Length: 262
Image (cartoon, rainbow, N blue to C red; front, side, top):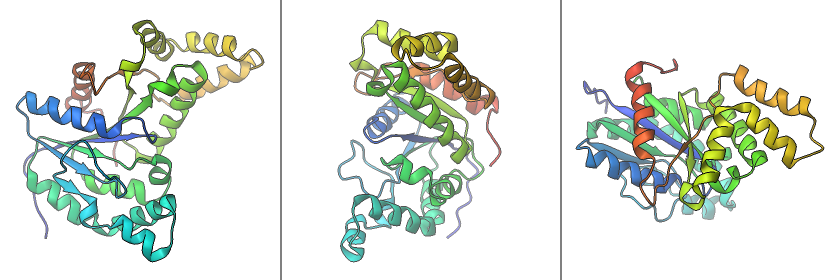
């Protein structure tokens, strides 16, 4: 079945490490878009999720039985996820057809929790590009507040975000997820690290005295040379804060044409 849509859809792929809050943000964005009287379709492409905090309009679990893969092939959780994602490539067109049938304004795609298993397999980028098609799409990369509270953790999160951006080839926004667990002064400090790299460099030197300034300078310079954004948008899915700012940044990309060719 081939479905042709004349309605422009905006696709939002939620990516991040396990426990970063992807599913909670997916549910929060659905609530936000609905409050603005926009239609939204929720797409789950995590075959191993048990009880997500949202109701999927399109669900990969209707095509892939994660539990059956474990039993049939005697695989562990990670091995089964790899096999499930590889198998899912065969159903990309079917899933995309379902998405187009919703004719939603926004499509929010909750990606697998084990991001490294999803992003670094060839099947991961194939699924993302196949589902996005030629419509405008972005990735929201979740920077876990538990990790980003230290300069070393923040920098490592940025480096991971750059690698994800290189794999998916989508315009990307960095979201400081679960910001409600941080005090306001810590949030502002993290934001400053992203906006003024020299502050992050100073924080790294203070936290890790034996780190060479040349090393930290080289890493930060690489981030800038690669064109990756180091800024973050603090968001709390639980408290529904920061979503208005995130929405504004998303609109700038969608309506401003800042969309990489795929």
